[in-house]
Length: 500
Ligand code: SF4
Image (tube, rainbow, N blue to C red; front, side, top):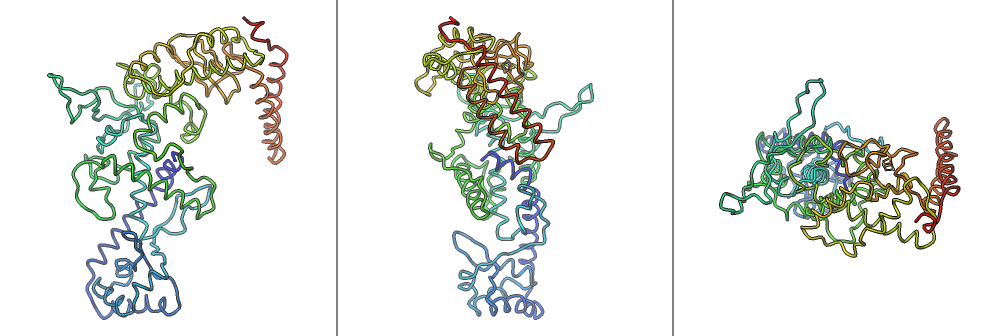
């Protein structure tokens, strides 16, 4: 879903917003047109050949029904809406359009691409409003997913909240910061909850995809307006509402976005549909925990791939970035700590199980990792109390004892700051797993890792047969390195009994 949302923002947004502008222009033309004989002739010349030859008629879907697009036809021919309506009635075009619905192509260039191919042949008049709705939803998904903000905080964002940073003394622009309201735990002097929230004294850091999403929303609303203003996001009915889109509306829009993507992938025969979620619909409240889960457990995984770099933790983590939110462990940082601690406990449990099953261990930190694994409690469930946030932060602060699974490097990292080769920040409690280096003193491998290394080497070797040189050569070298690492494990690994 995140990949598709980023695709909307980075690839489709320009086309969709241009299509919407054209839709508005044609709609204004149609409403302003006067009934003339010339327009009547143009109307006949435009529609009658379609009726006679069985060509599909320009149609839109409105409130679940397909109908002739009177506005599009009027704009194309110069006829008034009354004239178009009368013509449609006389020739039975309403029924005909239901049987033969056709596109309403607009003269808008298409520049967005998927896999190097244009994502649309033409932008369609009838689809513009729906695409604008999905574009707004895509922006919400990107911001919620990649900023760690709460839904209410995103709903409170206004146009202009994230200005481009000024260059620093060294000429390098600083980070984008989002200045806005926060709501959780905001009370007045008497301890009463302040529902309007307050301006957060420490801004949120915005990574590039979030900045792009905010820019897209800023083009949808007037300056200073709420980025999710309900009035400006009602593209179909154009009704004036008060405030921002509510949670229920946004939840519904996320579901509609998923449905659109899955219709599109099916129609185009693409494999990258959004799979059904076994835990039910994707409510807004799930985004922060999901982000934390990915950062804690898949540091080089899908989210990192989607945004093309894997240092989200560095950006989001208060302890290691620019003093951002360093006043507390509230917000995304607390969620991230909890998820990281749970992931570390799972890793410790797996290591204990592997050792108990007779697997051998190798690596400079093997003994330390075994001792650490024996001390870490096993978490049976996933419901965490508020006090667990503090406990999780304290647990992660124990340098040298916390175990991080690093599936991309086929190892467990018994992270000790001073011996880490991945260049962690001075006070970091977590390794930069995406920058893992061979030969690090914190690495531990089990027989399972050695097996996975060989399986991956075989995979790469097979793929290299179909790759051109010199890529193929590099792939073979890479595969050989993986095999050497597995061989080195076999040559040096010891049983848990021998290590303790
Ligand atoms: S380089 Fe060392 S500390 Fe960093 S992730 Fe790899 S094993 Fe862990």
